[in-house]
Amino acid sequence: MTDETRATGGTGQTEVVTRFAPSPTGALHIGGARTALFNWLFARGHGGTFLLRIEDTDRARSTPEAERAIFDGLTWLGLDWDGDAVSQAAQAERHGEVAKAMLESGTAYKCFSTPEEVQQARDAARAEGRSTNFASPWRDVPESEHPEGQPFVVRIKAPREGQTVIEDAVQGSVTWASRDLDDMVLLRSDGTPTYMLAVVVDDHDMGVTHVIRGDDHLANAARQKLIYDAMGWTVPVFAHIPLILGPDGKKLSKRHGATGAAEYRAMGYPAAAMRNYLARLGWSHGDDEFFTDEQAKDWFDLAGITKSAARLDFKKLEHISGLHIAAAPDVALVEEADGYLAATGAPPLSDDQRAAFLAAMPHLKERAKTFGELFEKAHFALGSRPFTPDEKAAKALDPDARALLGDLTPHLRNATWERTALETACGDFAAERGIKFGKMAGPIRAALSGRTVTPSVFDMMLVIGRDETIDRLKDAAEG
Image (cartoon, rainbow, N blue to C red):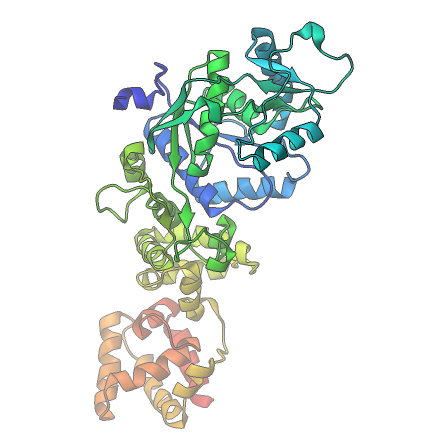
């Protein structure tokens, strides 16, 4: 398959159409977020369409809260979809129409076997060491011999001979013997569609050209192809991507830490960093680790996706996060910080705090890996007098240090308020006292912020200004 054919799904269509189709039964899982990202990148990179479908046919487990969590997670990640989200449950009538069309064409049939009969047949097959695929006795029974008024399911009439082949853009050519594919149920006895039928009909009706999803769906692709073939529809390009494992190589679960997209937001990772990091889980572009959205859209291709599962690595995520924080515009970081505070349940910044946070940002972001670290380092700018030192800072403010700060204050009161002059004033004062400035830096840091981990003391002085600096030093000196 050529790149051009692959990009159009082999249909001759000029537009790529991808979709993300989560079930609203819980939070947006980080694996689902990565699947959505791959679909988004592929569509955007080809100037195509990225659609969102909520697979809510399981009404008992689907919840409005989970649906909102999906929307919120995708929105935070910046994965904008085209048009309105589609409800799979709302398409049930259409799914039934396709099943009826398959009955009329002879590619499906009514099966009147009861659930108990199906289970008995499977139990017997298992006991005899045979395949447990159910061989319905109703497969070839003519309509005239069907019992009246009895409940039935609609099953596909799967081929009994030959092979079913999926040309997967990631996994390569994958083959199943047709005898291993059973006559799966399309419509249940209550007339509701099964997942297998609904997915195929929706993908066809939405014009999906590429089905990019987790490789746990690979076996489903073979069974779904039977429906495409029965309806004479063009099969989309399948691309089954590797799952995400925990750092220990086992299936990702809560024991490894956060598994939901919302949790990563609350942990303080910028959305751009998450997009960058998730893109590298199972896909690569040479040795590039840090890249922008535009680069990712331009580079992303199905050929770059690996077959092997990717492992979540929090150290790499933190590294990528730090690079994105350092590279982001200051205003953008302040704006995204609002979402971080909301995610953690913290109160929003006041207008004055926002202004102070923005002013301090150039001195905060170079070494911060998360928004949490940004706010910790910004304590000097966001807090207000009197600053109560934490335990470590309090140790730096012993009586000798407090006396030193009291003596330093007059020197700063008359200094020109720019970095070189401040460095000179403090350096000259330290020389007069016969000490190195490093001995003064700790007490000054503690006085200005109440913390020991801060930006440079001179950066803090410049951000908060002369009067506030002197007032905080006096507070600390007076104890």
